[in-house]
Length: 275
Image 1 (cartoon, rainbow, N blue to C red):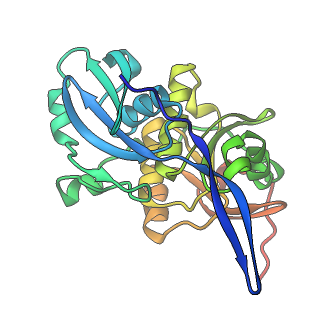
Image 2: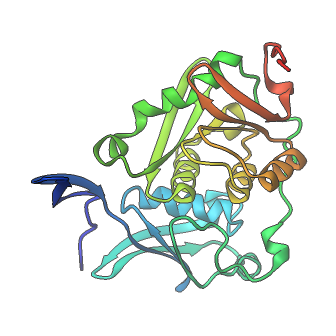
């Protein structure tokens, strides 16, 4: 049986400039196929960083609705092969209907979170209503959230080529984070790690190094987190989904400011509006 590959490796290259060429070594992220296998059947193959696979399996299962809680997973075993990794999960009870409803048979590129679903209805699935859930945050807590996340990005520090998702608790800052070459994978790993450590998603906010697309909002909603803070932009449809689900979205959060798009009632201080 193969061993899990290292998440970061070193590759030699030539650094070329006009009139010069020098040898360099670069630390680069690994990506490998990771199969999510339920009761002996593979339901998804994602290209991912080969780290925190147990968290990945748990988070993916929760955000895709394959399970409603970790108690639905009787066991999970991570098996490395020469061609990739399997996360083999055996489910308690009868989860066949839920698996059929969210059936995927695909190899998903790292930038795609909806590849392989069976219908347009599944792309706009019903989400929990989080309007009356979640904490309040101050302006400074939101504005500095992505700065706080930088301390939790060792793979990014080495490669400058991976995304991160972190969980921020008011008064404590970011308390947990996960990284991956895929932004969706990083979020699934975070949500899985939170569930495995019994962290209540309602107590804080999810912080992203990426843009806010529909599937990122969906995953936050499925996790029960009502605040989403991102360093980059949201899409219009992601904001429609967030507004309907009662999720506060703050984007372009860099340093001292941010854009607040939906459900501003969770912001403690008043925001001065400038024409």
